[in-house]
Image (tube, helix red, strand yellow):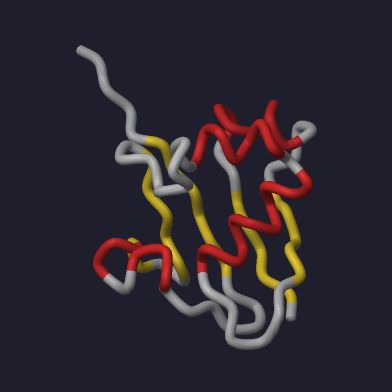
Length: 94
């Protein structure tokens, strides 16, 4: 099944400049499966999204169909065909 990952400008360099990535995963897949598929294609992007233990980075927000994944099931959040995943790093400063 096909899901779409949308990236902000700050992460596009690690994804060959793409703002939108279509990812094929098996039926019943989770956010983790999508990130694993991305990691296979774009390992530098994965390092920006997950830490050494493959946990979601604290200051990166993952929205699955408009809902922040940590309010759902975190990395175990299921994805359906046509799901859009928005990845948004937190911005800090003053």
